[in-house]
Length: 129
Image (cartoon, rainbow, N blue to C red):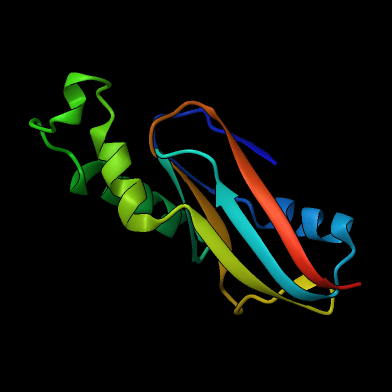
């Protein structure tokens, strides 16, 4: 599955796209694994409320801003690597009755930390059809 970003730092709700992949797999009871093939983006669960998504974006931009990252001598994206390491690049989610089992307010969020880019996410589903 591909996710395209349009900005350097961006938070996007990808729940619908991941659910569509689950439906294509036809699994009704099992586990869904979501994994990013990249080191400067992240995956997390949280509310998809626009204000919170903007808060997450701003937090990433401010919390990881430093003028002295060693890696910046190579690629000027050390902050993205550090933020991704702390946030994580995979999720393991239960599948029940053909749906991703999420809490009332939970959404699957993709955090672009070094965009704009096209990211590849692997979706694997194991379980009963």
